[in-house]
Length: 420
Image (tube, rainbow, N blue to C red; front, side):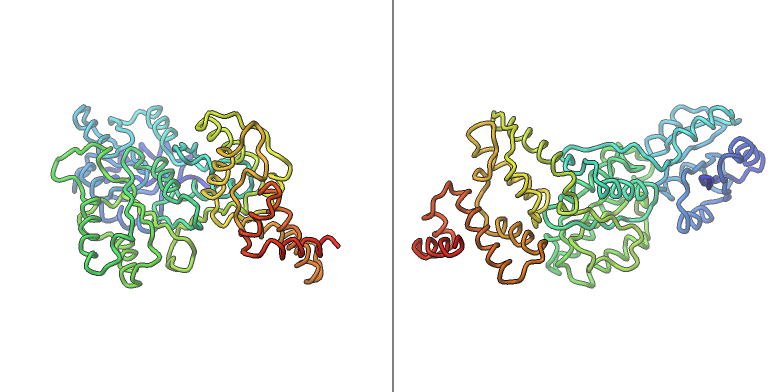
C-alpha cells in the first residue's frame, strides 16, 4: 500500500530527525528547508498533510504559512508555549499547534486526526437531498468529490440545466480545508459587457485579498471558495484571462482560495483542466427515482398540509420512461404541482401538468425499444399520446383538441382509425 505523503518544512536537522523517527515508518516524509522550496513542491505535488516549524531561520513559520496559504491541513511546531501565538495560528487556518520538543504520542495523534483520507466523511448541506441515493452514478460522483477535496486544483463542475451546481459548490466548500470560511458566488451574466470587466477584476481582488498586516479577520468573513456560474456566453478572451489568473495566482492574494467553475457542458472547459467533476443527469439515475419521489412527496405533502403517500402504477411507468430534460428541478416541480392538485392520498397521472414534450418522450421510447417498423412505431406513438392526454384530462376530448390545436371532429375520427 502506498504511503501517504507529509511535507515537512524544517531547517533544523535535530527536529527533522525527531519527526522522521516518529512518522517515517508509516508515512513518506518529504523535507524542504524554506518557503521557495515549499512553494515549488506544492506546485507539483499535493501532500496529504503539511508540518511546518514556526522557528525557521529565514522566516517564521506563521508568516510563511500566510504566504503559501496551502489548501492542505497543516500542523505547526514551536518551542514557544505562547497561547496568543497558538490562537493566531489557528485563526489563520493552522489545524493544530504543537510544542517542541516533540512528544511522539501527541504528534502521532495530531497527524492521524488531520491527514487526508480516501473515505472522507462528507458534511451535507441544506438543499442537496437530490444528490443522495444508492445508484452507481451517485457513488462514482461522491468518489470524484472526495478525490477533488484532497487535491488543491481548481474544480470544473459539469452539469446540465436543471442541476443546481451552486449547491454542489456549497457542498465542496463545506468539506474543504477552508470549510470555516464562506463561499462567494459570482454570476458572470452580470459582467458580459466589456465595460464591466474592470469591476469584475476589482471584485475578485477584494475577495482574495490577504488580511492586512497582523489583522486576524474572522474565518467566517474570509473567502474559502469562489464559484463562477453562467460562464458560457462570456467573451473567449475574457474567459481565458480568468482561467489564466487562477492558474498563475500571482501577487498578494490568498492562494488557498479555490475556484469552482460551473458549466453546462464540456465544450468551454479548457483542455488544461486537471479536476473535472461531472454531475450525472437524472435520466442516468433512474434507480434513485423511488428515493427522490418519496422525498418530494413528503416535502410537499407537509407544505400543503396533505397526506399524499400513494402513487399509481401509471405514474411510476411514466416517471421511469421520461428523460427529464430539466433534470432534478423539473422532477421536483412536477411532483410539487401534482401534490397540489391531488384531492386525496393517491397521486394519479391526471394530477400532473399537461406537457406535450413530457407525454411524447415515453411513447417514442416505447416504440423504439421494441424495434417496430417506422409506420407502426408512429401509429403506436400517436395512439399512446392521445390515450395519455385523454387520461390526463379525464376524457375531455375538447381540451385535448384545443391542446393539439385540431378540430374535435378530426381528433375523434383519428382516434376511431387508430382503434380499427
